[in-house]
Length: 212
Image (cartoon, rainbow, N blue to C red; front, side, top):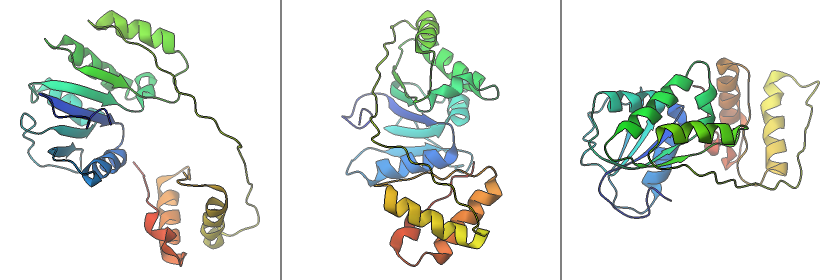
């Protein structure tokens, strides 16, 4: 909403850690009734970007850092960095850190919003951010209330039946969207294919695999 509120000078940016999330956000924005020019930048998209004429960019951390370092963007109005807890990630935390430093070194700092549901040391992170920022960061906490958390153990079911069982559990107990985690990419892709092939109703049309 903050990105699409109104047209202003400068690019509006939404950053995510995975290309699958970038595609999801990009598609959601494109589905909205807006006259914004919207582009996406991930490892799967090789199109030349004219970011000084476009309104909104959805990108992965690494692709956006490349654009910053190579001075491909003249003016940034707003930027949202989703899954900000990656700042503490051993492998990719330095990417998020470099992005923030480059943003704050610009002559005009953009409006920056950092989103995360799992940062426990908020005050410590805020202190670090305020050391590099010209404008001070503020913490806004929104708590989600959950009425019930339910765990189900599925035992004695072979792999071919498991997808149907899981889908039925989701349909009975989840109003909206659900996430299913597998410990390997191949198992996640296999489950997705089984659901799409074996589920008779329209539910299978809405099952996607995010396997970055």
